[in-house]
Image (cartoon, rainbow, N blue to C red; front, top):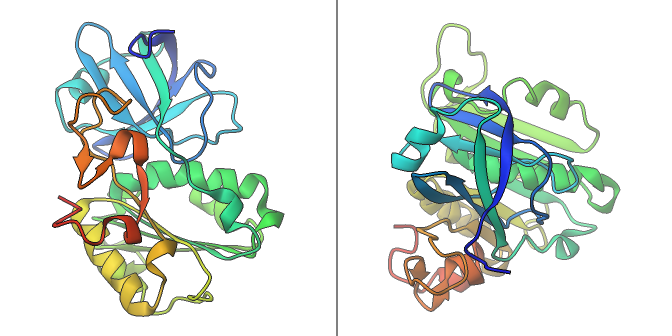
Length: 268
């Protein structure tokens, strides 16, 4: 099989999440994947870009939640339900869920970084009895920028799930916490010595969140980072996503702080 040849599929549904973020539900499941792995999504005649699925690995349809930030996503946002896109993958290594069993799982997300974390969260919930408790700490710029607002109330009803949100700037209707995501990490109600912490979001958010977790006492090897770079080929050939000795597309995108802490500016 040619690893560069995408599988064609239809866009089944388009769900606007925020003014700049949209979820694209594809018709069926052209690829199988595990939470944390990514795929290349092709806009025909335009190009492709890497995205981590936001849907559960157990779901029947494949979903990507994407921010409009470049040429490919600009054209993707112009497509309609029923239009054709391509998918190739999966690529990279997933989260090591077997190592998370019988432990709390502490998830910290920012902005559109909630997308791959949603896939992880849904994979954990699928077998929630395997874990002690799942914590989500999520920050967005404003209340309008919170992704999956319509899903959060149902998630908060799940037993052994604890969700806390914050926004950088509130509005008249917002009754929750205000401040960057690290401001809700003052209290971390888990066994820090054993708990895995998973972080995904903008580079600055990841940098300061990682520092906060390190200061709190999390083990470097227990801090899992979604190091999404310019993962072009997906198979470690083009050299565009290299961080230190790692090819993020092949060795990541899930790497630990222990893996990357000695690399100069690993989040840039």
